[in-house]
Image (cartoon, rainbow, N blue to C red; front, side):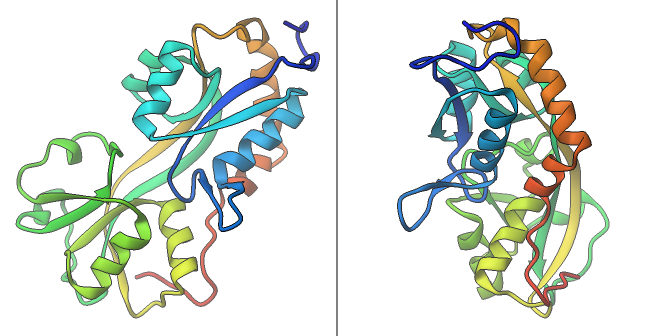
Length: 237
């Protein structure tokens, strides 16, 4: 293992897991790794002078991989599950979780007013209490944000749950306009951090990694990576 702040040597590859879900991590049409977390991993690795390999995995598997030590680093949404899985290195992003409906939907002002609706969510994602255990509406697992928004627009479901980044990436790709969607309800604000496996050989690098992450935040690098890629002309109500 290199001394603190030194680059890794040949063959000493840092394993970084990323959730295999657009816009976080995915293979593009040319089968290249792409996504916000892939971009983050590249910029963080350059900042701390490491060679790394990405592992695209379902989000629950990312947490399991950190807990078992089969990867070294990953970005997780903060909470008890993340704290149990690994050591928090530092702040990476802030996102808002909300429910989107058709523009014609009646406005609501409380979580209880979702009663009787069918609300989509990304399969495998956790949105915290009370959403994950709600019984007063139907929660429908969906494979992608684009599929979910298409189902909302077509009337096949009442609403879709999303984070800022996933939603704005989807509407940009789908070229949706302001007449089609309404932000129905904000559920919560969620923070995300970089986490390190307790079994990683990188643990002596923690102070250096924490300083590097703070530097990336202070220089606006993290904000640029995770800013909303809102489509031109789109103004969700």
